[in-house]
Length: 98
Figure 1 (tube, rainbow, N blue to C red):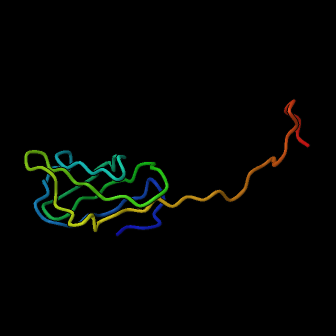
Figure 2: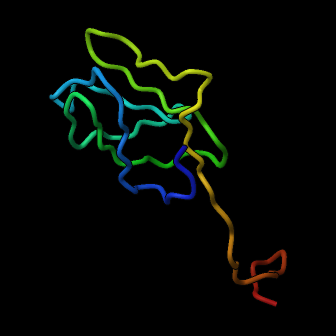
């Protein structure tokens, strides 16, 4: 399980049967592409895209072989976002800052 990584972070997925050419492996997290940067037969390194807040299964598709097994969706990624502040906090209907 990957958790708490900011979007655009690189993650490493470990398994077996991946393609040595990273362009032949595709990774999706919650319907959002994780851009592959490198791979070998046991690892894929990809850059996490911007996704919705929540926890989602990691889906790996190897061209010509199909989807990698993710038993019970046990490999997941959690997008964590929070709002820290906002300014201005109040404006008038005309757009003036109060």
